Length: 206
Image (cartoon, rainbow, N blue to C red):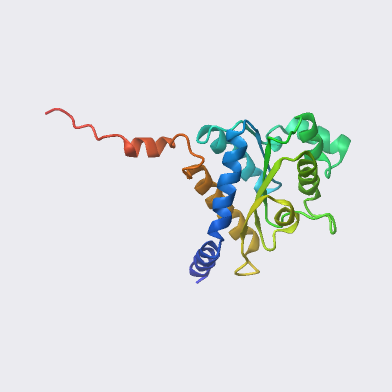
């Protein structure tokens, strides 16, 4: 049954994630925040949706000054039109005055490459970040592409079934970032439902 197979693949891929890489990312991200840096979260396609959601979580739960460039569709499309798809994130980061104290968090199935050009906009953003001394982190799949090479900390979701690469990577990327925003090194508050669960039960007076 396909449902059993999918869950089996997801379980095996999650079990194979390097725990030390996750811990290293938590520490790198905490250093960015505690050093007064901002966090810029980047992704394309489904990973752009992850970037938007994660920006909320890192801001609200972890106290980051965090931003997602794909949230502003007017600026995004203007930059694509004027500065090309490949330069859309790097020019956005330049306008944001990216500095050494800041950090990037990359969501990408392939991790980006220039040759062949796949998510080259992520590569250009990471090149700028490295040139300015900013911290680069990522959650990627397969061999991680450029992100795995350039990142200061990178979590790779391994391939268990080559017919289920994208859904497993994108699904487990969400698991990993939710782990991160729940991590004691990063979380400064609890989510709404966790706060309710921790509150003492109120017994109605009879």
